[in-house]
Length: 337
Ligand code: P6P
Image (cartoon, rainbow, N blue to C red; front, side):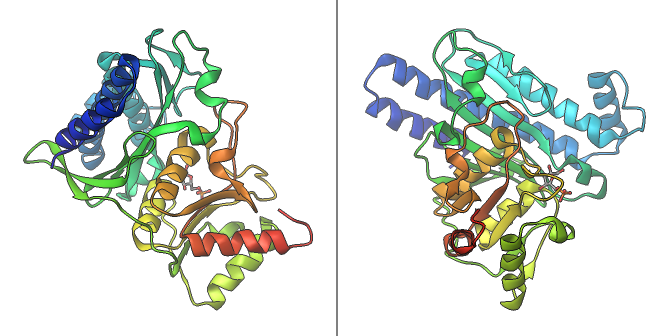
């Protein structure tokens, strides 16, 4: 099935189960927003694959006036991806708010809208130059009509409905959980059809894995429990795989099992990754595939309530047995989490 057919079927089921016309309309709008995002990500994928070629330079310069002073096209491609997502969401028309990791403020769209969209248009873009996988991350949350901007981000990650990411790697893969109960599915973009085709229905993360993923260079700056946990991983002869692109590292974790971490450290007490744009959608995908996502001992990432749109938080996601072990070590440590 194509993504289009998948969404039509899921939206029809949701409409059937809806108890009001408003709820039914929200389901249709949610499917339309996901379709608009997927179409845009297929376009972003084409630019990422052609990074460095003149047509991309021309497009990016057109979007941004001029490629930034250092000629860092990948940074400008960030902005271009942001613009493409904003344009697509405005054109689709039903989003109440458009919240991009690339813009300081949440942007108001349709005041009567009841769904807000948060997204990171091109995460890990510093890797584009060397051809390493990068990605787009998105999440949808329900808001009241005439809602305030804070209703988009000052709420627990549990409130996310549809969540997903697109990985621009060897192929362009969309991983999606549609609406708040959607199974985690993978769709591969088929250029010949200009469509995403369902390739994995109902992905379940392995109970445990032999891979851990973290920037080991920060070892000295972690707390004692994190150091002890990573020491235990190497004693258990696990492999370290760290791409430095969250979408790629989490996607591998989802399929192969193991863990991905961006812990708090001495210089980043809240870690590096953003709660709303990165941690919430990726944690929702991992949890809905049977994994765990914590920011400290017994604190689920999705229970956290940010106080600002760009707030950062520590994150540990992955196979349930492996994350539970870390949780247990925090619980048993004298200093606690
Ligand atoms: P570090 C990319 O810049 C990013 O935002 C995530 O995609 C990635 O997981 C992380 O930062 C890498 O950070 O400090 O290990 O280079």
